[in-house]
Image: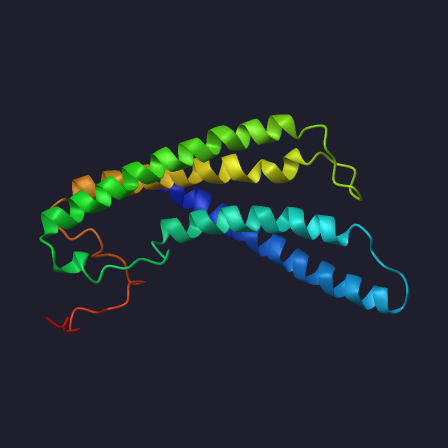
Length: 174
């Protein structure tokens, strides 16, 4: 599963780079052409479509790299076992939340299949599909992280997270 998620991360990164570059070029070109009275009317719809996908793919990449914001000021002071239990509980709650989002995201795709982007004339489901697909990717990432946590149970759950702010020397009054 680890190799699969690594390949998915590489694909997500490259797709995200291409989409972000496309948005930047599209918005810039659209603004330039608008000044000379040749607007690209479909640029906003395409930029929105790409942006939704970038957000969902970026959320999964950040999850894989453990780069989401987290506050561990208090939990770092707990025993390793308790830290891992809290992390495991967080993973389980996250999976249930993402499963809920996946279910209703699929429902949204199905109900929006007739709705079209006004200027692109493609189904709105192409944009809403980012939610369930991104959620499924995040569920797979969390499952991998849960397996890793259980495998390395004796280590602190955030030991490999270089994105955490080091606050261990901070004195808490009281």
